[in-house]
Image 1 (tube, rainbow, N blue to C red):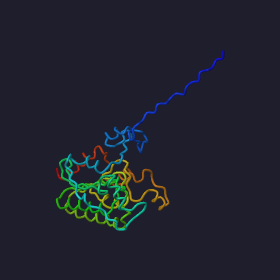
Image 2: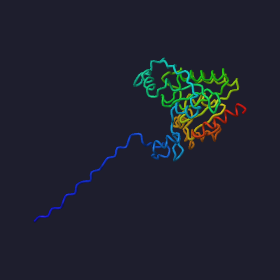
Image 3: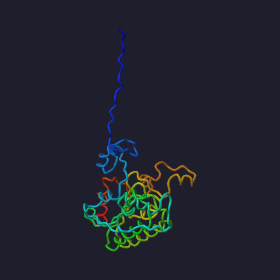
Length: 279
């Protein structure tokens, strides 16, 4: 009688379907973190304190008192003065981003109260074309600054931007002078302008209103500058210092006033508003 060795059947692996978006990888420490844990922590990494980028609407909900924000200028729309086209036309690109973010452009403005203090807010949204400043962003900023000037209210901006928007050419660059001029008029009223810098803040935005605050605050590890480090190294033919263009580097060299964690931002802003109001 022949003996036969029973052939072992291969183990059947059971694939477990993990819902997409359940986990997120930290850009700083590279840890894989449960997304709900990050969201609960105001989108700050619980392992290394890295601040993930958040939308303008999320930023407003963290800063403004509940149900106090009243949006203005939402009907402003960018033109296409250059008939600009790369892979798609500028008009099509604007339409895509409006659908994606449910914003009319890269800035949201309005009045609100923060800790009971009436303020005017302008918040840039990096999700809308990298928070780039075109004619609408410049106009919204000026209208916000003029409202703060006329009604003698503090102005608060939150910047997260790659700079001026190339699709509108020189018109985008003109917004640098336009926004800066509106701040000089606000200064005459002695109302405070608080500028908050989030990751990243670059180009024409950092070269204009973002760095003109009476008080300049940055979130930890935010990248802040004008040109990128590679461009600077190629220009000056030298290696840049470690942590160059980080909020910590700028604080050390006197370019900003303080670094504040997202969890403490509203509390610090309320204290500053109380101090400037003489309370």
